[in-house]
Image (cartoon, rainbow, N blue to C red; front, top):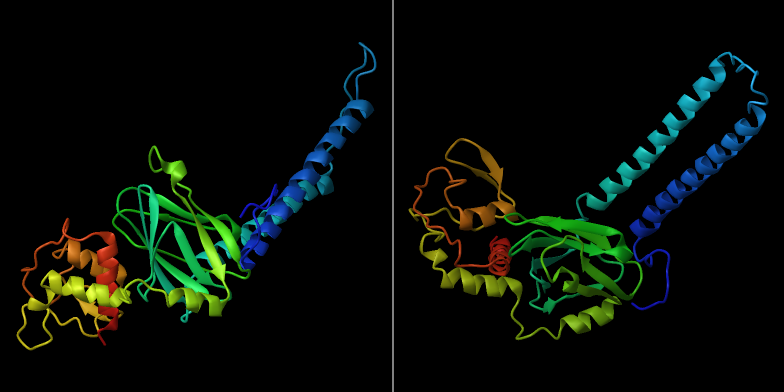
Length: 309
């Protein structure tokens, strides 16, 4: 990561190249108009300076073409900058490709906790393969954090009580800085880490060294059973709770008539605040598990429920 002085961070994604192009365009535009303004100030100060105490200011008639030019040209430049910036924003925060590798991240004072679906866990490090789209599902245990990789030109806030998502595709192998970009407490400056981009074969080899060989879904299943969830959510007729087989990604009809999609956020809310979105046809019997399970555990159970098809 230590590559000496650099005006801008290294470019390690295609998005980084495009973001820098917009940045250079804005810098060039600012320099051009700054120089133009200083030049015109000098010319006008010399050309139209008052030469004697008796000289009356000369009346300058309006020039419609000039007025239209200094109105229309900046307008179109502003539209170009807005369109360019907006298109980059939507590209950065659009839905990831369907084949994106999913990794879970939990921020807490003052560390990043990473879980791979295969079970590999990391603290303040994130290993990913080069040339592969990676989707991050992120949560926080305490306050607002912000997941920031300068070399990828991506940043996303991680907000308490909700999941946020971020995706990227690294184009170069190497080790890159990982920061928390939101002041989160007295040791905020220590909440740093690194992103290690590896060749796919090396990444598979690294991944095969998973501790204990327990996948994220397996850990979720264990936690699911520890909490006794299967007691009510048994996949049998007359169970006290709805079946969870095939739940993830499906449409769920609620007791109040609404219909929602069973995504990560819905599952999280149903575990911590079961009465918020009660499934139609069931009584509000489920207790809250707030305080009995942390964000990492919630992500593990979610990963397990995704396997119930």
